[in-house]
Structure formats: C-alpha cells, structure tokens
Amino acid sequence: MRTLLSLSFVGLICTTAVAGNCPNSRPVQHTSPQRVAYYHPAPPPAASKKSTQADIVDTAVKAGSFKTLVAAVKAAGLVDALKSDGPFTVFAPTDKAFANLPEGTVANLLKPENKKTLQAILKYHVVAGQVAAKDVVKLSKAKTLQGDDVAIAVADGKVKVNNANVVKTDIVCSNGIIHVIDAVILPPEKSPQASNTSKAKADVVDTAVAAGSFKTLVAAVQAAGLVETLKGDGPFTVFAPTDEAFAKLPKGTVEDLLKPENREQLQAILTYHVVPGRVMAADVVKLKSAKTVNGESVSIAVDDGKVRIDEATVVKADIECGNGVIHVIDAVILP
Image (tube, rainbow, N blue to C red):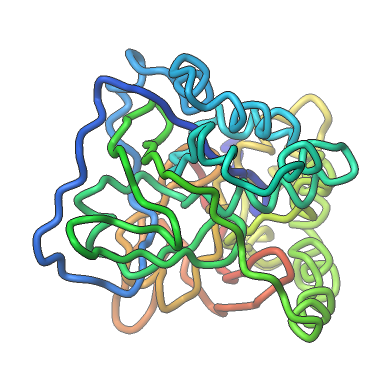
C-alpha cells in the first residue's frame, strides 16, 4: 500500500553563525547593484559538491578565528541544527568582533539561564537558503531565522549588514555559505506592545488544534514526536493538509503510519510539509521551489490564479502563528 501522509510543522532550525578562513572565499564585488526588497530561499546547491566540503560548524572550528562563535553555538544547543542539511547563509562575527562587545557581555550570554537570548542573537545572524555575495548586494534586507530583518546596504565599495561590515565572502560549506562580518549584530528590541502581541498568538501546534480541521495532522505530529519541535521558536512555514485531505489517502494508510514502528517514515513525510522561515503567500508565489526540513524540495506553481505545492492546491493562506505561518492544502504531499 502506498504510504503517504501528512504534514505539518516541524522544525528546524536554527541558526547562527560560523565561518572561517576558507580557500573558497573571495572579496565582495558590487557595481551599482540593483536592490530588491527581499530574499527568498532558493534550492540548495548540487548535492555532488557536499561530499568534499565541511559543514558550517566544522568549517568554523577549523578556521580558528571563530572560537567565541563556536562556543556560543554550543552553549545555545545549536550544533546539531547547524550541521543539518540547511542550507543556511551565515553572517559570522570573528573573535575580534565579539571582543568589541562591552566587557562581560559574552560571559553573561554563555550562562545557561540566558540560553534563549543567546539563541535569538545567533539566529539573527542566519538567513534561510544559500545566498552568494553577488546576490546579497542586490538586497535591501533579508529575513533571518530569528524572525526580524537585517538591513543590507552598499556604500563606498563596502557591504554592510546592519552596523557590521562584510570583510570576507562566499565561504562555501556543505550545508550553506558563510560571509564574515566585523561586528556582532543584535535583533531589535521589542516594545512591550509588540511582545504582548507576539505572546497572544498561538504556535503552529496550538493553532492547528484550535482550528478543529487538522485532527489527523495533529495526531500525526504527536505520533512522530514532533510536538515540542513545532512549539519551538521557529519560524516555520507549514503546508498543512486538512482532515479531508488525509481522508483521500488509501484506506489504512494513516493508521499504518501512526504505528510506532513507522515513526521515522512519518517524520519524513511531515517534515516535507515544512519550510524553514516565515514565507507569506505574497512571497510563495514568486518561488518555483522551496527546500523543506525533510531535505527535499517542493515544487511551486501558479496556474489560473491557484497556487500548487507539488500536486496539492493551497486553499487558504497566511494563517499567522506565534512561531510561523500556515498555508492550508487540499492533499497530502510526499517526498
């Protein structure tokens, strides 16, 4: 019986940064770049290149000039995330950049009680997808995994990311690319009103439960052991099949996938319905494909005013959650 299944949200993500002295790096080049409003994740580089390259974490460790960054990634519990498929674009501060912070700042951030703050800062240095220098200079801003935008500007032959200068570019890794910066950048402080608004929004799991039309999806997420992940910071973009979509599967498929012995298969299917980052409908329609947390890419097409994700049609878009966004689809898609 062909096994398919669902859905939903799952996480990934992380973020943070690392980099190093890599022979693949080259100076940034920019000549009267045409700026665009936003970056949208593109498909990852060819898999054949990955076998000969180290991942982001190992590249940073070998470089030797990112000891503080590596220590921060470890303290934040982000090592495994940054060793995953990605791809990620990391704006990586050097040890000297961290040393320029007020005395005691780094030591304080490395304390266990400040783990969430450290995670937010590190994620603010990471953008989903692999964005080379030639594409970075065409942007005016980019959405980070932390959720806020970084500003990008080119002036006097230099590229700036917020207040930091890009000093080395295009350090290609097996799961992304690193651009080295000379300062640590910090996410904007939230106003009390903004904080309250964020807290008022339910996460993707609670949103699905409250909707009442995703009972099968929620059951699958629970059986796959993905609830805590999808309740994490994210952000995640979830293409969520309805109960009706699951009912279209061959009889017995859902029951079979929910069995403990099929947990890994279920996880693979669910993570194929999730893309890292918060990608709103206005941005989805500009893409031809998107890399999922599963590692494979979904195809995206617009036909007769309808948006299709693989063989599924988006029937409702932009359901905003505290840690991402949900787009409802009418069929279960398979990796």
